[in-house]
Length: 138
Ligand code: IDP
Ligand code: MG
Image (cartoon, rainbow, N blue to C red; front, side, top):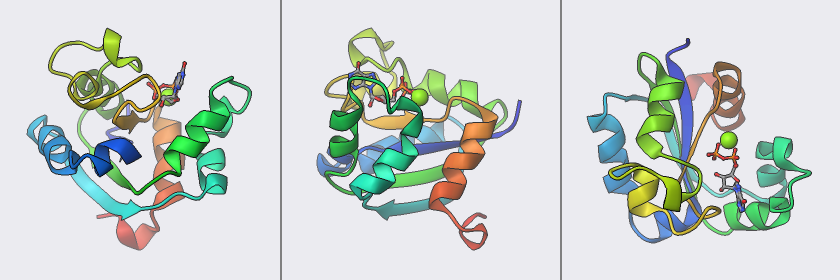
């Protein structure tokens, strides 16, 4: 397993002022921030980022939501980063997320679920490269 993952703090969590607390939990869990920026996705950007979900019924709503306000993107480093980060954030549906997980604490719904986490080493690289130039990765 690789030691890099990619996350976004999603628009509602940023809007609600949870950015600082979420970053604090991520670093307290042993993740090192390799790259970070606050930015706004266009609809086209969100469609590209979530292209694997294009056929899912929630795709249009997800794209609208993800482009509705600024997000905070981060590239993170830790041993076993993909699996450990997905454990830290909890299940996609916050009603099924374990106590203490980031989604349990900060998500509003299955769509507005506070944070993204990469699902594979390959996607972590694709997603990091979507947001960050080499000179923005440390
Ligand atoms: P993940 O973020 O836990 O990897 P995915 O299945 O990859 O979950 O879905 C990507 C994103 O699409 C989710 O984080 C969530 O924002 C949204 N999503 C997933 N399933 C649903 C759904 O059933 N309704 C609405 N939005 C959904
Ligand atoms: Mg996913």
